[in-house]
Length: 345
Image (cartoon, rainbow, N blue to C red; front, side, top):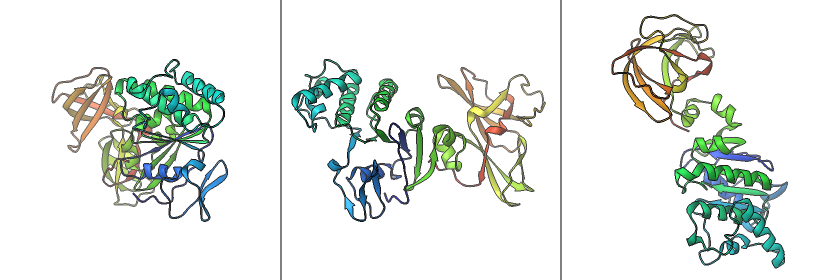
């Protein structure tokens, strides 16, 4: 994947997530910073020191970076202590103290004499983290480090890993294709697509102010209401929407996430009673209802134009097929973009 015009700054103690679909250039960017791949142009500075540029290209071992990948790459013939101390310099006592310190931090005290084959996947992941942090790197580079873990363990291990990383104070650049992981771990998210960073900012801002429809769709399912802008207004099943900045006759997409499409259970098909924030209710008929554990997803075919919209309802809500219900939308949670295909990420 060709990477173009990527500019990132990661502060000490900060976690930045490179987020995007497979093949968008995330891992290539990470490998260039590590020195495993060589960019054609540009500059890479670590703690103010140029490690790549027009006149310098330091090898990976001279860049002061820690590397952690999804396969952990532990040495099977070495003990846990041997793996963690691999590459450490200094006298034996100092190396042993650093190993003990890190094993305590990753909650593996007493594991020093074990070998990788005696460990669970989560324990191997924590050993790999300790090994990467042992030389006190200025930058920690992590490429999908949790993807090989069991779903039941992943959240807890991510949280404990984040605690250790923050305590060590290194600048962390983590590659992931999972939006939930980025939202959970990152101080800043850089959303990539086609080799470029299309949006960068705090998780709250990236999620709640997506730069385009694809960015919104990467973080969650979305409903798309298509209309035509006339006089900066677009007619929809829920009344007219303000669509300034779009030419008369231009098609626009009004995007809303399922959790912001509200079912008016009090009205239950008896007719509209508009509210200022939620605007005009619109009626649809249930096409499908699924219970997903924490919430239910209910699909509606709208009377207005036959379009299908999906609402997310907390808990169990499984209305019968063809039940008529009135829906309202959070206008302050809608995004308006030029019409076009939805491409996640």
